[in-house]
Amino acid sequence: MEQPVSSSRLTAETRTASLDAMAADELDILVIGGGVTGAGIALDAATRGLKVGIVEAQDWSAGTSSRSSKLVHGGLRYLYNLDFKLVAEALKERGLLLSSLAPHLVHAQPFLWPLKTPVIERAYSAVGVGMYDALALLGSGGHKTVPMQRHLSKKGALEQFPDVKDGALIGAIKFYDARVDDARLVLTLVRTAAKYGAHAASRAQVTAMTTDGSGRVTGAVIKDLETGKDYTVKARETIAATGVWTQETQDMSGGTGGLKVLASKGIHIVVPKDRIKGDTGLFLRTEKSVLFIIPWPDYWVIGTTDTPWHEDIQHPVATKRDIEYVLDHANDVLASNLTEDDIIGTFAGLRPLLQPGTMDESKSTKVSREHTVTRPADGLTAIAGGKLTTYRVMAEDAVDFALGDKAKARPSITEHTPLIGAEGFDAYERLAPRLAEEYGWDKARAQHLLHRYGSALDELTALIDEHPELNVPTDSAPRYLKAEVVYAVTHEGALHLEDILRHRVRLNFETRDRGVSSLDEFADLVAPLLGWDEDQIELEKSNYRQAMAAEDAAELATTDAEASVARNDASELRPLAPISKK
Image: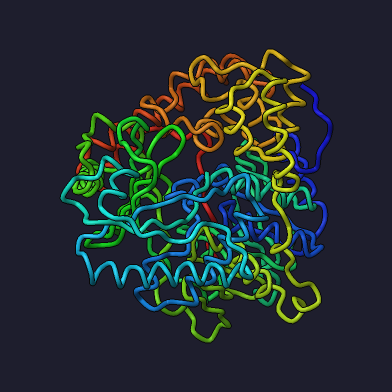
């Protein structure tokens, strides 16, 4: 299915070409890590006019960046720690994403904050939420990007969320944050970086770092996990944005500095939309942190937890105990009384928790309230911490730090650089009814497509115009068109069935069988595009079935250790290679 060449497209072919290009000429910056931070760094560096390469050992967003609460938020709870600067920074970024950078992907989301006492709690909560709104307005230059808070009586709160238990509140404050499909945000960042010249390759693992006679990092050895071929890539500066893999990445440099990172697990459960009656989300404070009950068009996402994780960091999983914890806290306020039988999906992610200080305090370091940038070795910059909402600020800090004094001559411009799908989005919102009529989509499908692709919807319709047979819902997952499955390969860099089901058409947590029933249909659609023979098709399907069966088994375990053993019983389609430590 030949499509017009576009520099933003990610395909198997552009991936190979990117690896060849990285090895052919010295880069200004090599980015290691294809999560939201690494993708943001690649975009920031590319839009400064630098020669950039970005590699990810797994699929784009495969780690923490596809397993978050899927919120773009200021961190309301941080106000109670008087962390005004951090909240103001995050709210500014939320406003940019909502208004100009990614309005097709990031959408305002109302929440209720249930109140349990009539005067004191309402007063201090009102002050906190009022300050939240004020900081948001300040960050957006007085332009309101979400509605302001509203105080609701008990009757008013129950009208908006009938499923709250009668005794669980005496009223509520309605406030706004935003939600986003986290994996799509990462994919869009990588595609936008590619549009501005970045070379991008997934399933490409850094297995060693190269150094000169003085010990300065000069680049990396990258293994193409699809072919086994090794590439030596030279770079003036290397930036590691590898989250919970930070210390493993630093160990390859031979340096004495670096960041100390621990992994903390957060899990979420997904339940059907009709199982909870409510028109907003719920924000609940727990004894440990907060719990969000977040509405999406077809389901609810509920989480999260915050527990130390000491097992395999590639495959964090939810345990029976985790699931019971989330259900118990949700049922404290929900009259619907959710049970394990209601759950259609779960996912678990690891937060990279920064520990105080660095491994070598003599190394130069830039510390934010939530993220830190440092120099583990000459030629290598490492960044960790932070959160999805502030990825752009983290990226700017990392590139500034890597460039040093040269950064002043090449300042960041990402604050004014819309992501793919954002430019012209307002016009496409107005075009949506006409497109729906032309292509036979109902209103819900038109909105679904608009909020996934924005103005890049023209790429999808071009695919449909050339292949009208793709303009029908998939039999196994009618929420998605066949064209979207194909588009995942022709434009979004999917190389395997698991890439599609986990990070593009996200059935692994949206359906009870984790997308297994879609394997045959999806394989038929993409096998010709990826050149698979019958043996490869069967390997793709059997590998995914094994992985999902292992995740099911892990959920029956009560401890992390037992769950990790169960999950790792499944073989890897593209196993990670051993790394070389200096």
